[in-house]
Image (cartoon, rainbow, N blue to C red; front, side, top):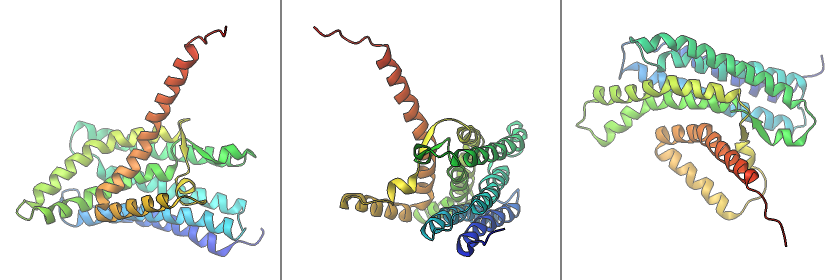
Amino acid sequence: MKKIAVLPTLLTLGNGVCGFAAIVCASKIGRNDVAGEAADYFALSGWLILAAMVFDALDGYVARLTKTASKFGGELDSLCDCISFGAAPAYLLLHLGPRGDAMARLLPAIAVLYMVCTILRLARFNVNSNIPDPAAHKRFQGLPSPGAAGCLASLAILRGELPAKLAQYWPDADATALATSVQVIVESWAMLGAVVVALLMVSAVPYPHVTKNILRGKRHFGHLMQVILASFVILLMRELAIVLLFWVYALGLPVNYAISRQLARRRARVPRAVGS
């Protein structure tokens, strides 16, 4: 085997380690613990998945910067992605969803569906990345697996950190009641949302490269100010901001894609006027 690039490989392995750590943290979530240690483990699991996303973005960037990109690195990246963006969110979903009712029986099946769709999404990406077509690398076909994992991770962060944030604004409120309310909201959306993002991963809906569109290339000064302002808002109310960012990216683009296709079909049906 040829020589291995050390720094990109370590970053890729950091991705997999964060995914495994997220699973370990999720396994410590108590079933009946609403506002205690469970909140900390929910939040930590979600942040570890987001940390895996950072490693996933950095390894490719460093490999291209140092001109050490290789097939070995690509295969290793997919294997680590299966852990961080497939197994970890799927296992976390088992704790995010409802418990003790009829819907809870569907939760393991939905978690399996999510993991299977992630694996299929990564396999398709590996095949498409070998296509020598520049247009194929400007957009993703289907929701990227890190984006889908971020949707579930953001729900875990919301579940773990929002009750404490709300308690700061309403100190007289019952902390357990606040945690229970957030838990009900997250449980109500987690199952349906997981099914939606799982199917979007294996769909043909085009998704743009976020980092390429935001951070790369030369932009106007106003664009820089928008990025700084958005970062400030995320830091100010990170629990809600992260949820909105991931779910708007996951669901907003398919809606826009469907509307654009419908409008294009209507224009195609309208007969063109014959010139005089």
